[in-house]
Length: 453
Ligand code: BG6
Image 1 (tube, rainbow, N blue to C red):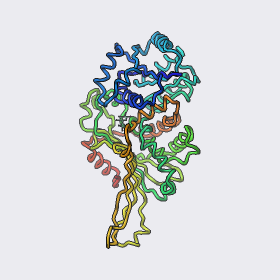
Image 2: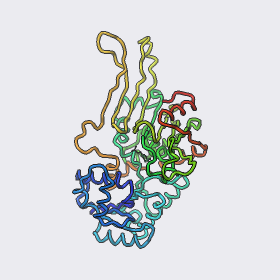
Image 3: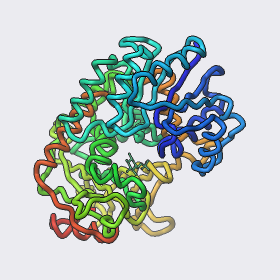
Image 4: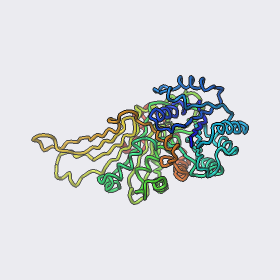
């Protein structure tokens, strides 16, 4: 049976920046079934030719248009009119039987409208094995609104048909976390509070809100980054060994550990970059945060007393996402080498931009000296890759098309994450103004009065 992937929001940012380049890469690498068609759905009045011409002006990454264009179709419709869905159905049926996959790359207020539309004309029916639907975050603004969206979704679709995207889960090094942890005895045996002093999860960005002021000003960094990406990374680091690596084995353990988070409310600091208020579509005197520092603890036997620090922000000094595991110091052994510095081991999982792992350790200096020196062992994950290095969205789209939901979030993970964010939002926090990363860090350190990073 052929695959029909229909994407609502085909003229939006996400489509041009991520989805079309990912589809193009999958197609170039012959990973899509021969009869796959991509139905680009938008409200703009395009022919397929004019849509492709517009897309070419919006997409800056190299794309093999000769291979991509033949699988694209364009369909214009109003998302809030029932008739449009009848027309869509007639159009899709006209192309014969197919697996029907829907991607909602649209603003969240359109989720219920589109979900109702496609289900009212039975483009997807509940429990239909060939119908799936995928949503982009944000899944609500808080637990209450997220629950409302979810109840709506469950009215039309079975949980197994719903795919919720957190694109960090499609990143290579995030998928690597569980392999590193469980396939290496060295780490597996030391992945606990006896050996680990602190875990720091960082997602720094150089850009500001750009043209997303409308969305961002209602959301802020806590909901935009911590609720999703950083909590997902933390869950993978902190979870217990899953019974299996199948879809629910991993999600089960992530949910369990997310429910054990305790936020250190005294150590939640938010910031807003200087100049944010003059960006487009930002409300006068907006108090939306563009950076967050926070400390949490997982109240499980494995992690008792180990702080997990989250740090994310826009307009910082560099674009970098990484997870830093600081091991305890080795004081017992220090007596063997008096007056020498023995560094603490540190494991850095580099998520982006240069994917890989760094391990800091002590070795003897070369030659006749008995001095100790600290060295770094570096593993570069993408250095030896020949050809295409799949982007997160390539992996996620392929999994969605093939029906594998392991790298998508389940409702109860989202629910647990919202509970955490709601608990913070209830302690009103006003953002401090920062100039740059160093400035934000200095503010953080002066408020919580300890060297944190
Ligand atoms: C998105 C956020 O989910 O993640 C953006 O909405 C953020 O605000 C982006 O810029 C960061 O993703 P990445 O993959 O560039 O680190």
